[in-house]
Length: 510
Picture (tube, rainbow, N blue to C red):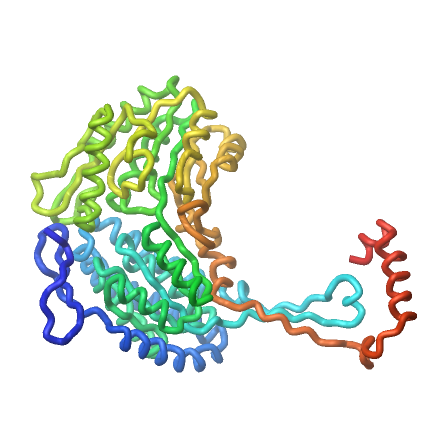
């Protein structure tokens, strides 16, 4: 059964019905915005943005502080809606969709003024004696925000807060799998006092997202699959607008021979099962040296067997959020088993529950000839491969089209950092699961097919701005000018030889 499907509409819109992945009952319907409606939303947003950009950082921050207040007051409403849309465990709905947005929004409300402060600099070289340089961060205008289904509030609230604090307006196209969380987020911003047209939600499918890119936005922030990310990047290239692409991952976990095995096993379980494995920087591959392989596997199996699933959402691992993702998970498992993988825990859909549940699964005897180790699975699976040593683990970790995040487990922290630096990926954690996105100061983004650009921290928020230099001449008369003379050219050459022909003066001068 499809969890969202097209139904007949009498309005001329593309209409969809959305179902709960736990009960398979309808939770609501929505109409996709037309191209005209998307363009109109961008026009309204641009009008609202002018007044917002004129506000001070403190004035913008006050609205965001009120937004945090509103989220705290209405957290039960957020949790219940997210659970209906996604089927995720209650504890993860609280931590990911309430706690994380509160932290993210608060971070930028407090620090945006510092990150985007105007700076004045003295130019180097010959210009130092005649020019003054001022650098101003100017908002881009209207941001097109396209977000995924695995974190419908958190992965929208974070870029929204950054774009707003930078002085922009936002038009948001959420995933068609989780459309109602965005409606609630919009309602929360209005309750907090954000101008009505400054943040708008346009519901829809891929056609709606394509229309948003063509509607005159000044930047696109996209989080989603590699396949869709390619289309978004191509469209932004045609329209000559900047874009950040936070795409898929196939994160590797490297367990060193000196690792605390109990701690590493716990990390493998948390990193692979969190959010039902629907986590772009979740652990999808685990490499363990043969000297500690069996005790590590044994501990992972013991932990995985204790995890609970239920339809109330009070268990440890929730439902699979989308039926198409269930198809991918099952296909990867079938391919792995056909090629010789051994399932120690789980491995097949949980038929004891009514909805889309796949149990916590542990698989061994895997290799890179299997889809499970090469393509993004995005499900609750620990796939463990035995290796000779850490060198082979590094080689295998880098044998991937993806490069979003990864983690290294060792008691030698310096060595952990050194090994982490050799993994060709966007970020690495040592003795922890991938937590980069949860640390607002840390730039987050992938390499290879995992994305383009970085979000978060000062790098991320500055990406919603144009860095505008203003250069002022400080002399009292014009410098140089026409007509050119031979004497002037000869004098310039002598100056070049005197200054740049002498290494000491060259370094001093620049």
